[in-house]
Amino acid sequence: MSTDELVFQIRKKNSFLCIGLDTDPERIPPHLLEEPDPVFAFNKAIVDATHHLCVAYKPNTAFYEANGIKGWESLSKTINYINAHYPEIFTIADAKRGDIGNTATMYAKAFFEDLKFDSVTVAPYMGRDSVEPFLNFKDKFTILLALTSNPGAFDFQTMQFDGKELYMQVLETALTYKNPDQLMFVVGATKAEFLKEIRRIVPKNFLLVPGVGAQGGSLEEVCKHGITDDIGLLINSSRGIIYASRDKDFAQAASAQATLLQQAMASEIKKIQSRA
Image (tube, rainbow, N blue to C red; front, side, top):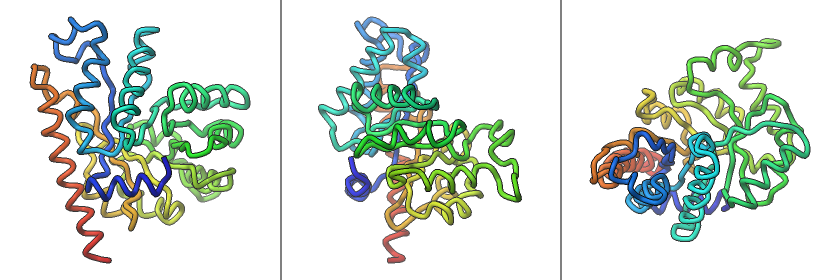
């Protein structure tokens, strides 16, 4: 998927919602445990109920890897189902990989060629040769961790070196890598006040923004500082949507929560249009 195609879907759906499929077998409705693959059954129902409200899905691979081979099979079936039935959806492997050389290439092949994700999250700590192998894949996106939503982000990401915070140096340096137009960046919603400066450095790249909802981030504040003429945002919500109910109405409840976010996003898009 290209950036233009993603923007088209955002405008078509009046939404820049990304739904995180962080599926924990201990939290899904009990009746699904009778299914041959409870995790896939849960994901399929969520996707069928919400695909018209979002533009992206983001499985966190840790929730699947923790279940061994069965978990990897659930992940594979989930992404295959999305690609087959809803090919307009942008898919994100939230894997947070970050290793050098051939290892990075193998990670990229696993997610881009085998599982056929559109993008993967990558930790930039090891530098250029841990990122560029992902950027070698045409029409695939690498989403670098820049400024995350967790409290521990302040341990390193905002430390200053030569008068400049580390996350800013990550953004500036990443733009010197090959194919920087294939880069997106993770910026936590709880760090909305940093977005104005971030947009000065990366005015056009898409930002993946977790932390709205359960983690306390404000959609309005994120949009105030981070939205662009082409929107430029993917706002992720996971627990607040997929675990809206543990009863048999779980998919309908997820749809209702996604609708609330989509409607709020439509209002933010309307603000942009009114300024045009």
